[in-house]
Image (cartoon, rainbow, N blue to C red; front, top):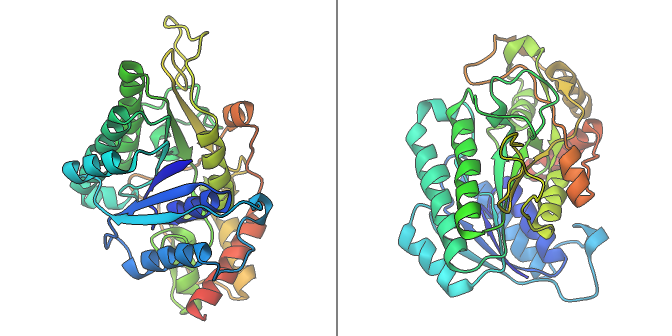
Length: 354
């Protein structure tokens, strides 16, 4: 297939691109390479994809799916999602079979400081993707949502069959809006769409603004780390390879209308339109202090901890119920956090020579 991956220079997007290429799909990558965090890291991810396609990278990248057939081709477009004319031209030129939309303005806390950046990227940008899919007969749109949509929900594990209408951060609000926008396009234009609520993704080539990356850098530099909610909150930390496999499994199972959907008692994760939503999480919440302890163990060094209260926009605990993902795709995330943290530290030391 020919697949558009938006956010291809990003953490998740670069990994998804590699996986699709490894199994033989052609990938068109899109990214605006903005400076929300170090653009050098984004360029290095793109360089890694190019090296993989050229055979200059070791064959240990997703060896379980490598086949005798040639690897897919990769092309890249530097383009902003909010560029309506540019996006329309891209869809018209390339004629994609399917789309994996991962580009977004990320970050819960930054959405408090610059909400307009989230509207430009996450709302206007998502609309250009929906319009491109609508007008060019895309078979399936899979897009990134977030566990942040659950917001004030306290009934855990979070399940997609229950409402998620009270986000406490503007970032989560824009992603919930994406789910509703997708539903309207699925209903109006029979466009199959699948939204994926990611739970605290971590791993090699991750984002520098995320906790594991910041903690590792600070500990190695003998700087204190800020530990919010005094380290008592829990997160469903999900390793990057598990996210990638969940994304691709969802992409391969095109959303279908649910013939049993009841408008008098509507489920929140499916519809009479070809629309659905899945959680992708590890199903094993870990207390932040335990997470930090695993990092200290992997680094062989103790952290200086600055204990602080819960930040605005944060929630105490996250915990994913992935039963619907398993039922439809047959895939269940399974990487233990102990193994995932060690892999990240190994990558970090190699990349930064730390």
